[in-house]
Amino acid sequence: MIRVFTNLEELSQAAAEIFRQTALEAVKAKNKFTVALTGGSSPEKLYRLLTQSPYREEIPWQQTYVFWGDERWVPLTDERSNAKMAFDTLLKNVPIPPAQIYPMWGEVAPEQYAQQYEDLLRNHFHEPNAGFDLILLGMGDDGHTASLFPGTAVLHEKERWVQAYYLEPQQMHRITLTAPFINQANKIAFLTYGGKKSNALYEVLEGEHNPEKYPAQLIQPQKGETIWMVDEAAADRLTNKN
Ligand SMILES: O=C(O)[C@H](O)[C@@H](O)[C@H](O)[C@H](O)COP(=O)(O)O
Image 1 (tube, protein in one colour):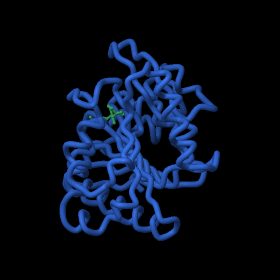
Image 2 (cartoon, rainbow, N blue to C red):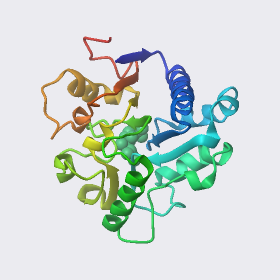
Image 3 (cartoon, helix red, strand yellow):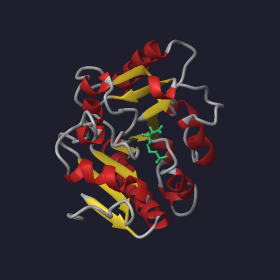
């Protein structure tokens, strides 16, 4: 499903509403809500909204479990850390028990940490084909999502839920949920705005199938739904906006 908004404010409001609804439904059904946050700049406004009324009061924070879709392999105090951004804008300001927040960072090698994070997730979910209630994702203007970058080996991973690898062009390690595991989610919301994303958005949604070049094409949940939340500038090249 594609939803087009006139500006980031409206897009973020609608995303906050999806977050609230999904959290309430999950807690009603199984007494917990498990969400994966995204990094980048796109979710900042959403995160700030979630700390305000009515979301601050109505979201069942005590039963919320927070993971990340991906991370730059840097300490939690580093400005590039996706977790730092989420703590500063959202997590410090809502009553989630700290033990229910799982940033992707540890004092071990990134590959070893990826295995630990996967074990953590498998323990959390119990079932091998279970997935997140909600995953928030962004998309880069090259068509990457999470840390699934064009031309990387992680795009071909079938078994693992989490992987870490060295991303040569950025000279840093990245850690990411893999596409097969992301696709086990019940709901995925892409937050994508700005004219510089319009080509990639067109290629991902309406171009030829070429996930090697446009990895966001790999995101096709088996049983869940994908909601593309975009602004008019990003949607500029789309012919089908429904
Ligand atoms: O850590 C990251 O950078 C994210 O993993 C990445 O997938 C991000 O969501 C996109 O690059 C969009 O970034 P913007 O929201 O900044 O455009």
